[in-house]
Image 1 (tube, rainbow, N blue to C red):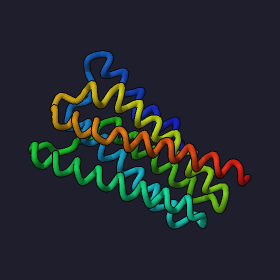
Image 2: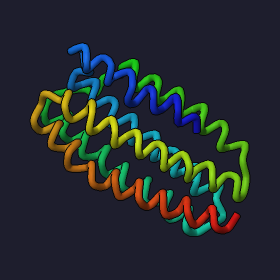
Image 3: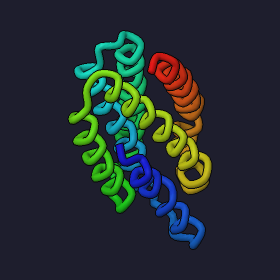
Image 4: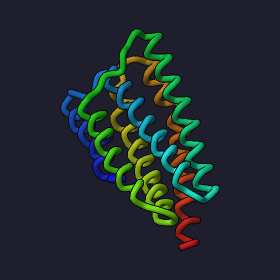
Length: 174
């Protein structure tokens, strides 16, 4: 995955706008949350179909399950609040970077695929945490939207630690 593009999309652009007092609106934040989760769901599905390693497949399934649950919560909250998640430059950039990453990953096999997928997961989850802490939580105006983002942060941090552990075990097998 071109995680550098995803990092710029997820963190840098909205952070600069936020610093200038023009951060994403709540509907755009909801759109970023849904997009970021969907990207990891799709990456997990790809990993489940391409990896032969049980530990990588198990991690991928956890990403699918956990991020699907967050998207269900986000959709329920959006419906309750009468807010439709909106696309933004950030969500569009995330989708573009994810498409490039998926294309790259689909061209890899075996250990190369596993390492690239897990390396991406480490970088992606770190960028998501940075975005949560520096853009999404400070920028969210609606208390319930902010609470949802705060509520899911520990799971994202746990995903990062799990991915780092998996990354270490893949490096030892190389």
